[in-house]
Length: 149
Image (cartoon, rainbow, N blue to C red):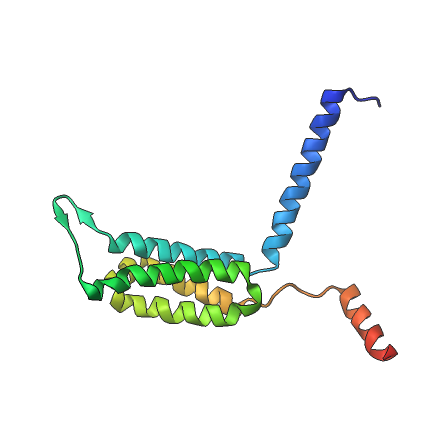
């Protein structure tokens, strides 16, 4: 079947969008994406729960209130680091768990418990992440290399 120029361009766009979707899906499966995302969302929620402005009443905290800003930023940073560097997922997950539990004391009951729960579940998912599964061809290739050396 002979295609004109517009049809050929449209088919190329469909093919490139399909490969882009598969590319993101493959990239996402190689890292603890959902856990990192939950940690980051929990940090954002805690940040906005600490910056309260209710009508004419503005909640301000002194030097002790710095942790209401630092803890959410640390959680957001840990979420990004988990997604970008999955090799260190256990270290970042344990730190995220400790910080999210401490946020119960430091940030308005952990962002009114919502941010703490999101970050804690994300930290558990990150620590429990097992990585991408090895395929049969990867296992067979490693066995052949081990026997030949």
